Structures are given as structure tokens and as C-alpha cells.
Image (tube, rainbow, N blue to C red; front, top):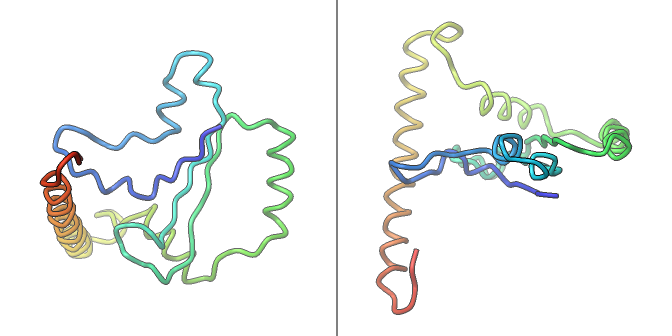
Amino acid sequence: MVLADEVYQENIWSDTKKFVSMRKATLESQSPYNKTTVFSFMSVSKGFYGECGMRGGYTEYINLNPKIEAQLKKYKTISLCSSTVGQIFVDLVVNPPTLEENGEKVVEVFTKERNEILAAMKRRAKMATDAFNSMTNVSC
């Protein structure tokens, strides 16, 4: 079983690498690895949007024993869900603005703000990497 925290999928600071979800890696693997049970987690409170006070997210699973899946679904129906605001944030994360639905101006502002946030995070990640790499016996 693999528990994959995939909230940082936007935080790839390499020009030669891209994010690959654990689900995709598992399903594209050879047998028996493509039968591995995977739980993938996403949360708006830890994403690049920086919504630390927001509570909302989702879990996706594959290759789960049907009896366990039935118990999870039963449990899920009796548990509390995140607030309406948290659910709105999840929707915004999984469905960013599009030209068709929101128009050019909204997409332009969203893209600009997203790129600025990610560029700032990339600069800070490079500073931290450089600091660690300058230490004796430490490598990033």
C-alpha cells in the first residue's frame, strides 16, 4: 500500500522534470506493481495557494479491496465534511478558470498571480538548496 501526499504537485523546480501522480505511475507499471493499492491525498491548506486556514481536500484510491472500499464509503457518509468555504477552495484548485467559462481577463489575472506565487517559491527553494549545498557533507 502506498499513501501519497500529492499536494505539492505544482512545486516542481526543474525544467527537465514534471510531476507524475502515484496513480499514473502505478497504473503504468508492470505486474504486480500495477495492482498496488494507492491512496492519493490533496489538500487546499498546504497547496501553493497558501490557504493555510482553509480546510478542504480529497482522497482518491485505486486497487482497493472491495470490502474495504465498502467500509470506507459507509464511514464517509457519516463523517463531517469541510465547510462550504473549504469546498469552494477545493473546487477552485481542481477547476481553475478557463477561457470558455470565465473569459480572458479572469484567466489572465489568475495565470499572472499563479506564476508570481510559483516564481517566488522557486526563488526561495533555490536559496534553501544553495544554503544546504554549501554545507559540508550535505547535498540536495
